[in-house]
Amino acid sequence: MDLDLINNIVNGLKSNNFVHNFMKELQNYLENNISTNIYERENITMLNPTYNGNKIITKYRDKMLIERLNILNNYASRNMNNDTMYYIFDRNSKDEHIYNLCICEKGKSSSIIEVNTENLPNETSIGSVLRKSGDNYILDEKATNEVSIEINNMKNELLEEQKEYLQSKRIDGHIYVTNKDNEGFEEIDFPEELLNDCKEGDLFIYKNGEYQKY
Image (cartoon, rainbow, N blue to C red; front, side, top):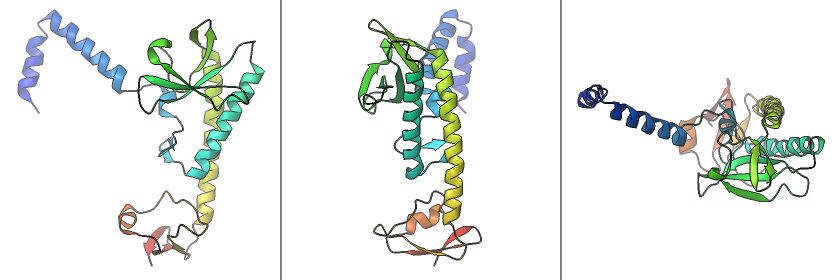
């Protein structure tokens, strides 16, 4: 621990300017580096997707993405109100200050709209539902809450389905081969020490609830 740093902070607290600057820097750090919004944490990313601390295999990631799209389009069709509904589904991979939006309407949802966070309400994040008033985006809090509940329920159901699917593939005493050419399944609960050393064509046996080199 840096005692000099602590002493500097204690001494600096005597100065109102120090406190003001410190709090301002802390606020900027939290805003730029820490997400406290549930929608940010629960995004279905294309790479290494997780939900509630559980890894999601490609098969169920794709299912979740399709079902999320259906939920958004169906909700939008029921609550159109003569205006278009937009959904923030991710941050831009090239610029973290830009959100990627989709139009919640069949035939238009594949188009990606990039909007700088400066042009969006402060409360928006991944998972927010937006409407437009003129050239301005407005947060639809009611739609955001209702859609998030539907999406989270869907993900919970598919996560349970994934658990059952993977368990059905883990057969005690069965031998598995790491071969890309054969039909197989994506295993997310594989010992890291085996994963680091395995190569295509290696054989493994599932025994007593875990994989072992055969």
